[in-house]
Image 1 (cartoon, helix red, strand yellow):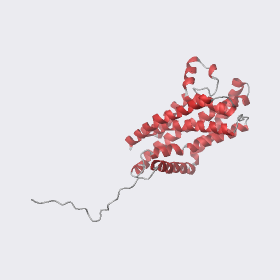
Image 2: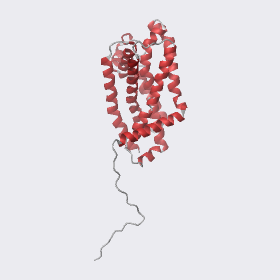
Image 3: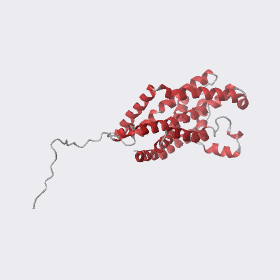
Image 4: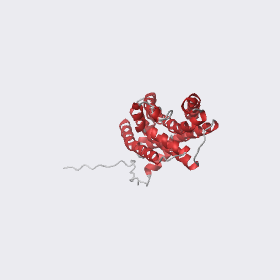
Length: 273
């Protein structure tokens, strides 16, 4: 009776277990968010939409509709600009999905999968890295609208609160587009589906006209539309009024959207890679 002894080749290294560092996922996500930010800064053409859209939409809506809706451009700007805080940041979220889908197709995430990082870190990094787009959108919007007559009627703290509220909702919606990017094969498909999704939320709202002037069926949608709630909250924060309920509702909507779509995006990503 013979005994088989298994030997390990002399040149095969033996690795000790790697100790987990605290806050590893947060650190990995922050590093990948920084990578996303550097990528955007090195390709400034990716920011053309968030620079030009605030100027284009503000000018078109204010000068075409201001007289008919509010009797004048400056009066209309006081209602329009807070709504554009929400509309334009939501439109900027589509880039999150298209960029994520493009990175998946390039094989970049195959390298991430071989690294000792959290599986959700690349998704969190992609979503957080795009926050700079939302910030730039609001900066350009405020700058241009101030030039043509908009005025903040509260104070800097309330204006900052409106910006944070709009960016928070946009960050929540970006997880919807990250999910699309993980599921769909082509970035163009993500962009096309994104437009179909964003339009009812942005234009099917109280952005351009008061809710009471809309048809009854559309009023029912506007009342439950999170974008409409966020627009009302931003109006109160920028031009005055008690909008505590709207602010709380917007925060709850943002948290709820992240709670639903972030896990779905991570699950779809794991299936894809």
